Image 1 (cartoon, rainbow, N blue to C red):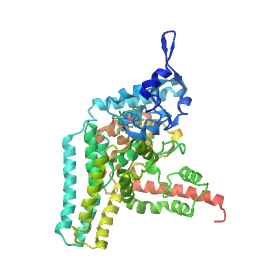
Image 2: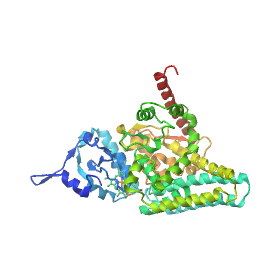
Image 3: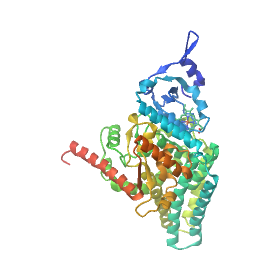
Image 4: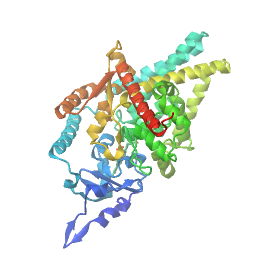
Length: 484
Ligand code: HEM
């Protein structure tokens, strides 16, 4: 538990009694910003300061440390169930000196404006899920799975088997969106039900560990497109932690070099030079890496991020048995299907496995890539306010170039409204279109740049961005080694 929360000692320790009156300790923003590591972590919530140092028992895990030394007011609202505020009190150590944040009146009004908008959405019932919608989605997904299985069981045709593998890839992608909604607690108020549904659609059907996913994904939401402020801090977005394969900014490549004795290996130089071309091939194999990380998480033999590692060491898995059983059952049904119920040769089974796996990686990652890649990337220490961060790092996907909107809506599983989802991750996807209208007009009112693109234009933007980073990297290399 954090120093502040240490049996609520923090609160009494920090409040001085002078002449019978309670005198609260006051802190400047600069003081708060000094406490940025997990072992020395202060956070601000509605202008009050809390010391959560070393609080690995936080029910949401190590993601709390992404906001060490920062204001957590809006990310707290984004993630928590009503009532979680009650627990904050025991970490209280004093008040923030508001003037020390140097926010002008416009910024104060803007922050109030987006918090009011959130309250309005609650009043409009936008956070309430339609159980019928999710029942239909679950049923539809199960039908996809059964069809893929039946195509293998009842047919001897290679074309049908390839079709089954592609359908399985698409099924996994759609399971990804379902597990995503359940684990963001969009569907059930009772969080345990969301977790259990997440284990079904995540561990059992996809082979992805629920906890691995939560760690990585919640971290990504908290600090979207941010680079770590230092090696010790845990305030970087795990989704853009793709070095040495891909660099999303020149600074990212430079930081990687600095962390590796100031030198780029030949592999790093080649990877970044050609990253606009290797992007799609890498996506094809993304599922294999996610399966590997999930397996390691569920069986306690590794963790994918520094946050997850620290959390595992101190707290362990939330559902150790269910995760292990879920992943084991996943590989069992996969082994049966992938071998054509024990009928196929090894090369044929491999063909089926890789067709399904690579197509899934491609279907999933195209949507992820469009969501944030090629959008603004920030340094953790200069991150803007919550609203600006989420809107400027995120791209919505619309129909276009012959791809109809209804297909985009189905294929992207709600994440076509990625901006709205990042602002309000607990709003169910079937309400996103209504929320979009209000978010769009709020952004126009306050001059926040809101970006949307169709799947083709968005992909071209991602590739152009990668090429630009690559060009900057090459220019830097030429400066250092003019003879190359
Ligand atoms: C003093 C500060 C905090 C307290 C007392 C606190 C408390 C809690 C509690 C009681 C829960 C479980 C109930 C619920 O899900 O609402 C929870 C979950 C969660 N918290 Fe926090 N929290 C704090 C700060 C943060 C911060 C700063 C973040 C993100 C940057 C965060 C991210 C999460 C997430 C993602 C979950 C949900 C995890 C899940 O789905 O299993 N929390 N927190």
